[in-house]
Image: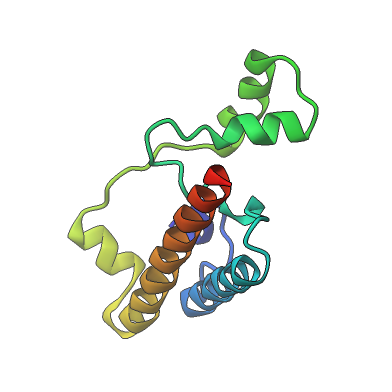
Length: 126
């Protein structure tokens, strides 16, 4: 919903939007398998876990020194809290003929998060 509806990207072709996102997840998975110590593709994937402040790494990467000004510039513009959808909203967003794409997307998304967790944990112990 965030990409197709809120940002009006491929809103009229949701199957293409899901296919694109699934492809990007597969690329991240492939890169994690090949370059296990390079977990930049995991930024944002683990944000629901307690204590995971990936924004701090992004702030440092781009040279921001002041957390408050960084928050005003980035989080206010790019980060929106998750809002649960009703079943009716879900069916409107993903009609039954597109459910197979959504199921594939969910599997790819969960697998990518699992790989990110494994790699970040492995790299933290090293």
